[in-house]
Length: 122
Image 1: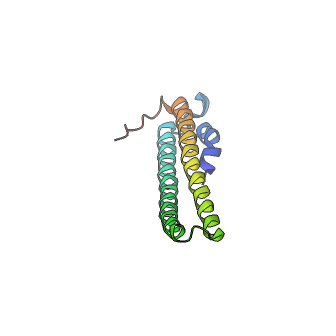
Image 2 (image 1 turned 90 degrees about the vertical axis):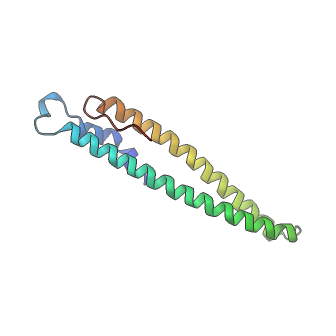
């Protein structure tokens, strides 16, 4: 799902050609298309991560309720620790997403600012 981030420089090179190739490519349309693609990808990934995080938190609450009744059961405690680890990993993923988003939009801004100005976030 991070293919667009891995190829951002390549995509920007296509979107913003040198002066000699500008007659063949419309940089404004390419930049707008790339921005829309980045934005849609981030929204989709963000919602997937948020959904997974929400489901894991609900599952953790269920396990905690079960564990409060059976504190001595090692299987329940293992499930509890596993779910807590999953939640930490998903929270780390949210942070990583923010870093990747910032980096990609920074590069986008540097290369496309003279061709396309994205709308202000609401």
